[in-house]
Length: 75
Image (cartoon, rainbow, N blue to C red; front, side, top):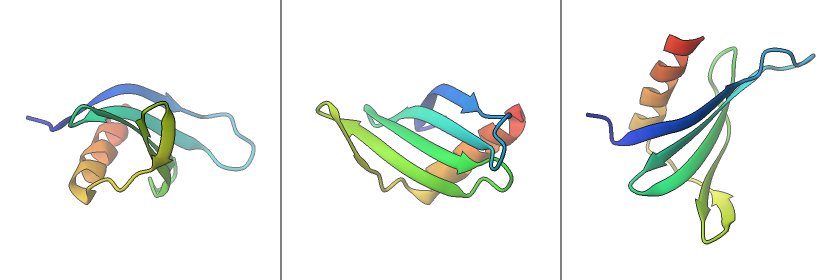
């Protein structure tokens, strides 16, 4: 069983320079957002949303790999 739930995924296909994938998910009752480069799924940024603000997030690599696998299934 996964320890996270993807709540939204945006796959940007029409940018002139780079294409990105942004994934919003819940892990341990906290909301996160991670943006990847679409070509190699390198992390561009990651955020945690707490108390009405966003802060840089430190997400375990195991979770990132599972999210990458989910993205690969969709693109």
